Amino acid sequence: MNKLEAFLKQAKADYYSGNPIIPDEVYDRLEEQVGVTAVGSDEGARIPHMFPMYSLQKIYKGEKDPSTFLAGVVTVTPKLDGAAVSIQYIDGQLTMALTRGDGKKGLDITDKIKHLVPNTISFKAPHQVTGEIVAPKEIPNARNYAAGALNLKDIEEVKRRDLTFVSYGVQPSITPDWVEDMRMLQHVGFNTAIDSNWEQFPQDGDVWRIVSHKEFDELGYTSHHPRGAFALKEKQEGVVTKLLDVKWQVGKSGAVSPVAILEPCIIGEATVSRATLHNMAIIESLDLEIGCMVEVIRAGEIIPQIVARVD
Image (cartoon, rainbow, N blue to C red):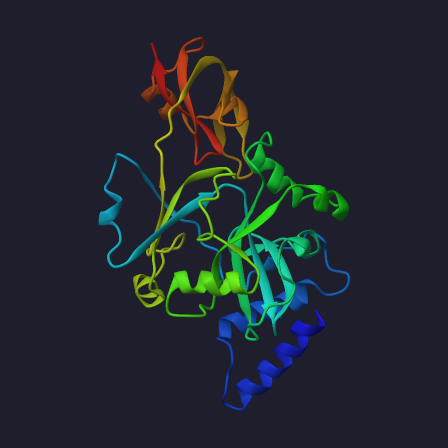
């Protein structure tokens, strides 16, 4: 952390001399990083990203015309399905890499991905590069294979895995144009979202994004996602299986909710045998009975969900 600490010392001096070099909120996050990563801190401690990592609003093909959502010049790139991470550079040196976590804070994975990204770049100002760690789709459960690698303690085992980092963002922006930013990242050694259609990796739709950073920033953000981009996805087709039982579970908040026990079925790359039903009203509205056939999807490609009874 010597590089980061030296930078913060200079940034503080510049601030008090009336010439701040980074926004106050970025300074605060970097200062918190120094505190969290101090000697003796918990290995699993959450560390703030230099810039928040937002999720994307989802639009499904056939339901709405995607061209009506964004005005101006728009680019479309593949939405890779792996593990989102941020990579931080100070004075051109890699100082931190984090899992996405909750978008505000993530886990330190610097040592696990140093071999996948440039360790030195030509941009001297602080920058955060965001992107996806992906694995070839020929690997069974490729998404879990990629994401699981970031949880391994054996760095050598991580290095043996077939992983690639593909960048799709850099903050602060380098040019007024997102495509040009990607070209700048290409120039310093990154794979980027515009390099290829990346068919060798799992994908779950396309990303539509306004090219102009000025127009993108003017649209702003909700609490969860930017308004200047969205993910266009195929509407999921459900898998039909049998409802074997319903059990009740107590959540962390103390709330009791029903869980469907299903005859195991394959959805995407996952075997599904349980699905959350949320509450009794869902059971009644779907007219569910033990032994009936049901249609199941993985909402957001993650959470098993019963969407209908199939007679």
